[in-house]
Image (tube, rainbow, N blue to C red; front, side):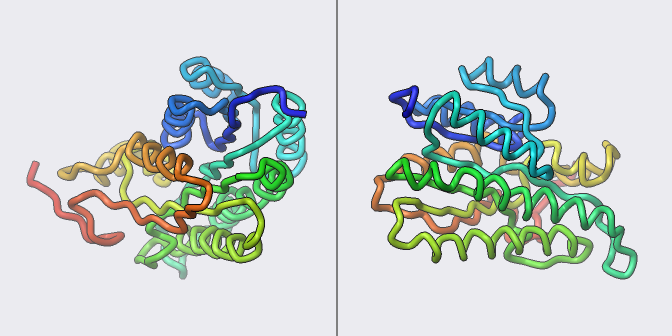
Length: 252
């Protein structure tokens, strides 16, 4: 039995960036928000800011996901929206020079992480009578680009998972949406370049990229559409970006 009259939204990768912004945005439109991520100290700070609940979560570990889902059920007894945001990229090596460990990590966190959490919470989403699965993909899911093979493969996997899930849930009270942002100024590039701040800064130099709040605002809009409306896919780009590697930059 539900312990709250408010709809409940679960956001993964919620300790920073798009995930943290999404938790704040959904709390702002009336959701009780559950925030999941590995960095519990930072997660609790974000949860305190938006009145949410922080629960430690590693989407690459079966036991962690199972414990997380059980904790959501115990505390709230329901789940109305799942935002699969946990993910990321590592490296820009060519296929010929691919780092297998980096590829494995990208597949685990992006694809299998999305699968694990979705599978664990899907019964509750169906039981809600109006559930939603919103997965944060990437332009990399739509457009292969040089140096992006590992991330391309992972995000293409997330896209395929999302689209098949939409087909499989036809007739069930669950909507499925894939939001694919282009360049967003978060710590994404810092992670991709393994802490090289100079390389990360260069990605955004001379251009105004999307912000985490821009993407979060879109998630909030999708989550608050009428029950009969399914927003299947959204591609979000900055005005000065037309494809994965075509960006207009002003001189600095």
